[in-house]
Image (cartoon, rainbow, N blue to C red; front, side, top):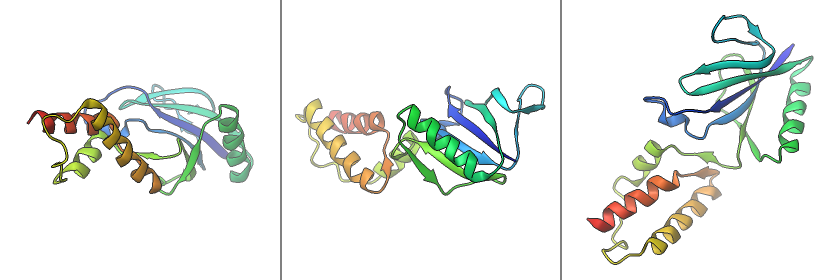
Length: 162
């Protein structure tokens, strides 16, 4: 049997910034367990740990049947998704919600480190900063990524104010 497990970032958790925006459906060879009792959870909210909520969406006879269920479920909700290559021990397949892989605020700050911001001066408007952010995001999306827009905007405003 194969199990469909949904994991979703629901709350800020100290030192868990890397999970911001995380939402995925997994096909696993092992069922998920309730975080409170440790018992098997097949069709229910299973609990939250470190800001990640876990939901079980049933068992399926094959991995392909579980994948088909996920694809139909996500299509019914009109969600874009992409297959993820970073799999855990019992995870056969993971579908992440969203067309692009979100880059955390920390990852965005790291990307910005050492960036030439000479185009941003004291008289650069918020509208121009928004245009710059849009251009950066468009470039990142070509690579299947999406930076944390508020972090980009904040960094450019801080640079402008000097």
